[in-house]
Image 1 (cartoon, rainbow, N blue to C red):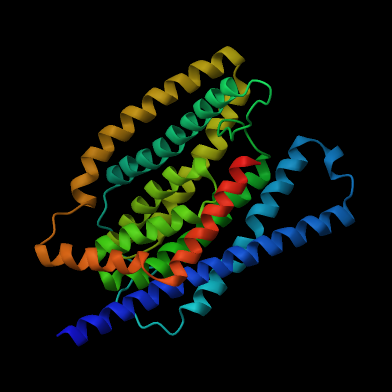
Image 2: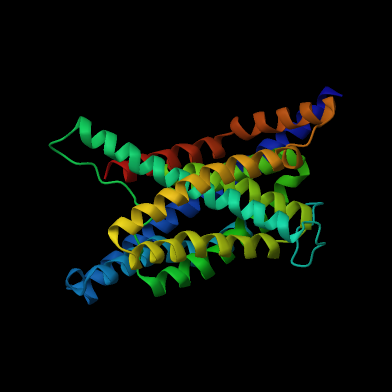
Length: 318
């Protein structure tokens, strides 16, 4: 009995470690590719800084997103190609989630993004008061980026690749360890991938929501649709709305949005918590706890966590 248990734990640790090493390798490759794109742009377009803020915004988006868009799926797919999974998250699924449920879940994701954004801005203001001689620059989710590249990357390309990788590949492999373990471990990996402090909370919440949809519909097409809609609202519609109204009107819009986000998040989260956090049997809880222990206690995942935290910390202090 102990021999079978140890064998099962070794298999679990091995898969978690492989996923950790894969994500670490992907992160390093994306960093190198981003550096290569930066060097190429400096050589071929040396006066890019004089092209205006929209051009700089588009360049930053290409440097940060294009390597992941190109490399993520083939790298993860190649790494996990020899894994034999019994789960089946495919492209054709059973629609078990109603349209109104999708609306509630999208509200949870959007609220998480903007709650994190408000906290980031508040934290920046507080740090600026502490260090008056050196104002702190913080990410502002309400300032619009260059529109065309935002739609291409954040509304189309990134949702497709992220859903294919994190839900279509990684979540599918993790489902062998149970729904709860797969849900939280895949959301945690997705959160670390975000690469920024202000994105940790929304990426974790969205990771749980998108995984929940993929598991219940046995498809990534619904989570992909929701992912694109959430990004469209958060990165295009709301920033453009604050751009066209006056400064006073912007504060009114953002204030109303803050109130709606907090209320919506609390209402819909508590409405869905029993569906997402289903009551399990004692054996299922034990199996989940053992799987999560294996998730933390392996070299590959530890290295990926350290790499991600160093990246997040370096970006936060720049």
